[in-house]
Length: 141
Image 1 (cartoon, rainbow, N blue to C red):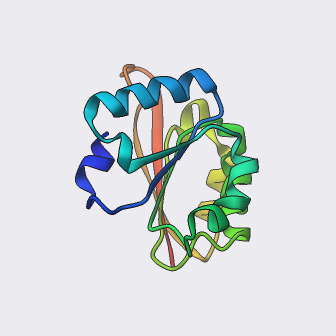
Image 2: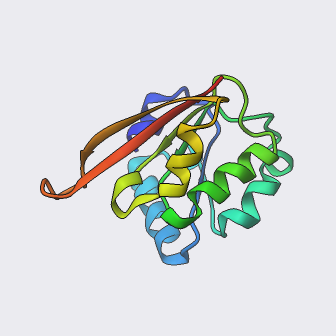
């Protein structure tokens, strides 16, 4: 909600949700907040959706990508976005919960990739001040 409320009305905002129940809950929240016409919820798995994004939504690339789903597929999905040319110079990628539960392969790749400027912002897990976590912010050069 915080993202969409800060963006111009004509911004294309796409979210991918594999779980039908979660997608339905998100839709009802968006409707209640009055932003449902501005958000496209795709109910499918990322590996099915990412290769179709360019064609289905007529986009050349994304300005901003927020990754916050199954941690073990962060790297796979980043590479799918790259392979489908959806990440261009200036694209910002924010990956949440990279320390706990963690996405070590994603961190290894993005932090050592010369195509990205990346920075890890350490924090604690939401709602738990006793568990270390982090958000990785990367910008494609």
